Length: 306
Ligand SMILES: Nc1ncnc2c1ncn2[C@@H]1O[C@H](COP(=O)(O)OP(=O)(O)O)[C@@H](O)[C@H]1O
Ligand SMILES: [Mg+2]
Image (cartoon, rainbow, N blue to C red; front, side):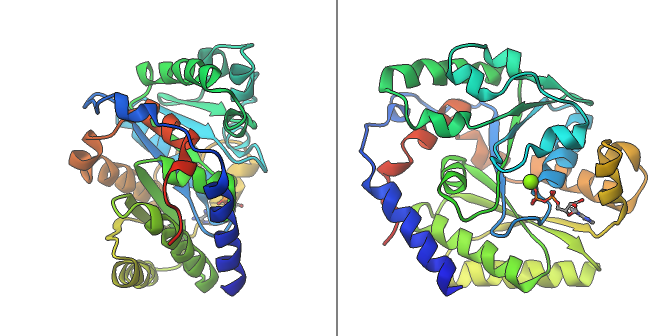
């Protein structure tokens, strides 16, 4: 815990010393038709972010929403593995001006598309302001084909992941019942709370062994976050442990497609419904994808750590 706090401080002070730029975000106004951008993250790795990104996206797609998943995990290109489809291009090809954003969109089942981020988003931090504006414009075309953009990130404690979390209006925070996973999730919210008390944090407990265990974990994490960080997280629900989830990866078919009539598939669907019910009012006032991209670039503008 001590090590992690040190590491967080180090990342934040590095972000803070980067050069400041004015935010063009303020020049636009929120628009009710903008798509929702949600960052899916966790403190600890291997807790089910990619599994949840894919199966939640498919559940939302089944409800008729147009969903795009952005695979922003630099470590492993996970999303394509779960879909069993290899993308031809990545976001980096768009940044390098070699492809359009539509060339990078890979069609999956049920209204779901995905984009492999490559190191595209990270590259954006190195661009000049004019280039950036034109890239943001290009990526923002996605708003025409998506109602919801889910960003699947790597594990929580890295500069890149913290950028994604700080830039999105809404975060889906995944934890398992393991104490280290809960502690790392708390540490991540703590970092976020220094910058943004209004961020919408939505919890999902994954790999629960019983409803009782899931509710206990939700209560424990929510209480700590509310009491010490003064943020009220929302619970989206929980997903039970199911050994077939690992098998679905091997067969390269997403779980809710290969196992539609299981408890876990129902739980994914419940989470999708809850996500579309809760926070609708608050998420209406977002700046959509454009706002997300501007915030991602200007992450160093805010006062990160006090
Ligand atoms: N509810 C679950 N029950 C059983 N296994 C799961 C569950 N969720 C995820 N897994 C397994 O846990 C491992 C890590 O999941 P993954 O989605 O890749 O995590 P992350 O993206 O957070 O690193 C994978 O092998 C996956 O199949
Ligand atoms: Mg992953």
